[in-house]
Length: 581
Image (cartoon, rainbow, N blue to C red; front, side, top):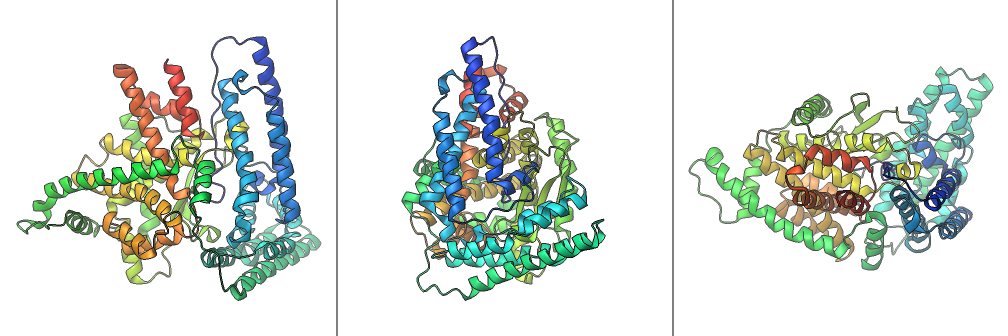
């Protein structure tokens, strides 16, 4: 799953160009490179929190207040740079710069649409949360503690104004996003009440600096609590629906996914694929039935029969207290398999740290990867694991059956090896800062889903039918994410029908289905990124296999594909097919 609040902005690698280029072409590329450098510096000044998350620390002490004035600042930046792009003939640029051009333009147009049309700041209170960036600055050791604390102290000054602006922005919030904002802000506020205070005590700051920082931290904590209290007491008799509606959904899909498919097309592909997977799962269940149920008559309903087999296999799972440890234990096994099968190179020098999911990230995904930014290539990549502490016993058991011994391995493939962690290490090597900043979420998620497939194809799990059955169950989850997201936001699918889709047709546990309903009610379009990206990557591989025949090399394909970083797959496809001509 995806992602932290910054995970959608990930790296894309610079594409090299072969052969000598005409002087005019070299000149336009030089001018465009100069423009990019100026663009990104100005971009960081407008988005200092994002800059910090990417390892660029010039603006660490600045906290932007998200008010109307800030919207105007962003729109001016958008208009100025869209105008600047007109001076460049995209057809005269190198392949590398063509991709940069597209990604800058896409980002600018998306920002403009989000401010002028989507206006989520009016109905999504969870847009306003400073806890994450302060937690990042406190926890990441990119500079000496005292230096980080001095930047934090200056940044804290604007926190009360930030939350007052949030109250002014919110017009007609949804019930779901209001609760999410309360949970995440209160959960994340521990950074001000405990984490920051402990760091101040152990710092080398002067007593006056310590007192000033402590006072500002308390003011920030008060502002967070004031905001959440305001949300709890907000009277809103006719709250906005969390459903986006078709018009907004189609446009958001276009901007966020950047696919060669439309939302309607990928929905149709997912619907067809669901029937195909059901047929494959029925065959495997027929094969396994005597092993697990002897002479017990098979059920007439194929989906119920598959469900019975899955429920039987799902009893094998770790204990709640061992969930995170079991993830850590499996990572070396995955690395060894990738090496043995020669699927792609994995850099052993890049650290992967499995950790409990931070409180400010709670409520959206149970597992995610947080990668270092392009300016902090030596930083840790975190595998965030949701905590089961405090869960009722029945909910915990349901969750662990969902992430049983088979599925947990596939989850680790997706999140870590050779999924998100591996791809983001490749992506972070980009010499093009534009590509490193404005990466495509569908490519990132699509690669992780593709990684699951290629591991099973390569014999992971010894080709046991049980593992393949669970893989198909997991893959159903991917495509049902698309069906669920589209049906809920466009077709107004009810919660009852959504739960039925997930439990009856996708064989998910009740706890997982309930969590997915919660997720689809506070996000839009992101759930389609998994199947869309996978479909485009898989189809590209199959097209190249057909085109290259015996010359096709799987490892070479993987490393070449990843060398383009996290660009939208449609752009990578264009460049890879061009190179094979």
